[in-house]
Length: 518
Image (tube, rainbow, N blue to C red; front, top):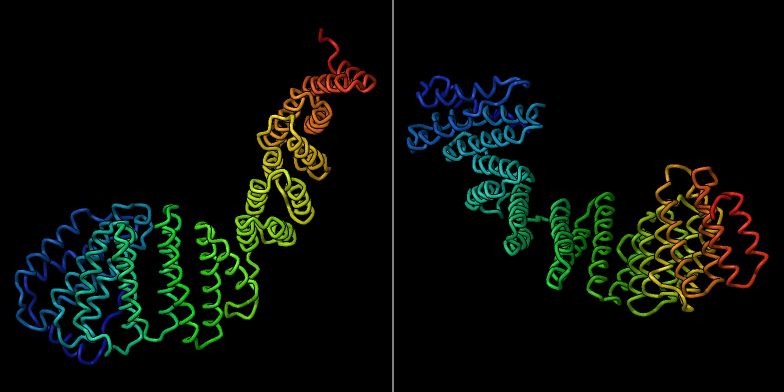
């Protein structure tokens, strides 16, 4: 954002003094370079030599310190502000938005503007010059961070911190200046985290606890940053150390939410803190789940559902039944897990991928005993929301598993899948050219299962699965051969069952479709 001109009475008096002050040749040189940056139109590229030229001029200017007069320093301030505002205009230009090299050049110009202020930081007649100088470095550091130039960002933040260290934070009363102290600390912390200096990042966050000033917004910012680091640690690795780090950071975020609630002065603040606390508790539940601390997961879910999170209302987030189901499975409480799974049918907010994954997780643990539940949940979901053919395919494939047939468990799972895929609503999911790939896939799944049972001489189950696979072969000319093949293998199944009439019916159907096979 552009920096507003300074218009205090003292500065206007000194402004007239600088107008009468004869420019030093080096200041005139710098002003000409700044005029170049101000004169660049939106469709013009930034001259590559401009940042370098300004940096060289600034280096020569630094050699003149200490400067001869306060008016000299004020001139430097005016030039710095002009350069900064020119950078803002350049950053907004459409041609720069698609050019990383141009964006870096503008960032270099911002850095020059900040360094110019630093040279004249002891100016008099300017309100809060130390704060303004630090602010320039803070904003420049944010730009470098966004460009992933973390070393340059860190340099800016450290310089800003060095400048502010001369101020007694206890004597700061301006809300904006207080916020700068916190924002700078958070920015330094984020940059340290990006370069994998995790210890420094967390140390800076802990230091920021002294910069809250009883402000709800400050509590929110710090809590959100602890949570962001916790989520990052959670996604980084799945080892115990990372999980412990994630849990520790998230507990810090939760503690700040609870303390922040005590500072809330408006209903909006209270609701925001409550929402943050609820979200943080859900993430803490997920960490406990990954750590295998299933009792802790159940406790967190209970707190959320009972409205014991300070909101007075229960949390119905789609993740809760999944977390609870997996925790109950981990505790060996399969009946409780089944209740959670069946309860998902009534929650329309649960995305398809989530409940399909939940069905898979449940069946993976419970096995054959959970086949009927998996089918019931899927059909229940089918009745209340849009379900894709891909989801049906995943569930059918998961329930069938990798069994080769011949055992009782395989037979039970095949029976359940046969009931599932013969439901007319499921068959309808696979109709049309848009799902040709999925239709071929489920036909292959059913056909392979039928073949496994045939080889195991379980002709009854084999016949049922071959029959269901026929539901997924279109009745068109292109698929006549496939349908004829299906009828012939069904003939073999019923011959194996000594049901000769049924076998004869199927071979006749095959001959109608493809009579010329020897």
